[in-house]
Image (cartoon, rainbow, N blue to C red; front, side, top):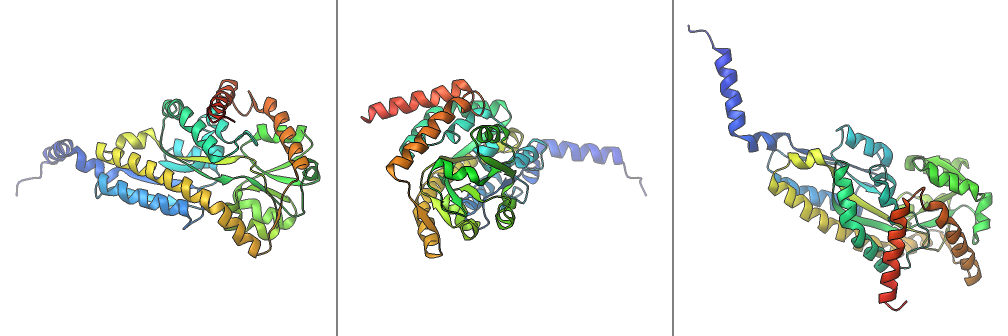
Length: 340
């Protein structure tokens, strides 16, 4: 029997792999997406639809998976996992996105600045091209922008004025030390935690105030332990779907185009649905015992004064000074054009 020429066989296999790069690529391309969004939520469903569109365009060997409910850790940890290749993408709020590119904080960390969603949309779209270039320079591709409603304060006890909250302990993101320092300097008590710790911390008294959108307060059952909601639109929760540049470049052109198109559609869908569900979530929680506390005009002036006091502290710390000024410039021009 003639001996097997292993060298010739390996050479032949290598030549076949080179001759069929698309087939080899389709077998290896995968998108593992991490997020804090609840399983089966509108955000999860949008991601699953996006994944089906992408897989169909990329080819039969492409793999897509979504990890919900913070199973991959908090948003700072999700950003780390993308950097080391354990995840290829994430749907994150500004809390996680700023771990990649700090300027994005301007869209979410300026309290009481935006009066409505039209203003949020205008500023985001004005800043979007430059911001996406900055993300790309850090090795990440943004394929869609979304949001999740306005942050409101859910507390165990009723509270109406800024000073009412000084006797309480706030949930704070563990990855935002600058915000914690600002809160402490103004007499508030932040307790840095991850989202998975919110309910146990509320139940044990470690915290008694949770800044949250109504949708997430309902989905996470926060309102059961913190049944008072202060009805002010403190800040929008803005987010984006990002993938690593390495994962992006591994895709076929058809896969890239499908992901970008699906990402844009998913962003529009998420924004529209999330804004609609704010009122629906509040109504659902009120039926189950939530008390909605509306500040008087006098109390609202106190909140506006607090926000004005916060802006100089945020500029140059939580938000780069140049970006901070750009937000105000775009907002002023928009309001002038609308006769505000």
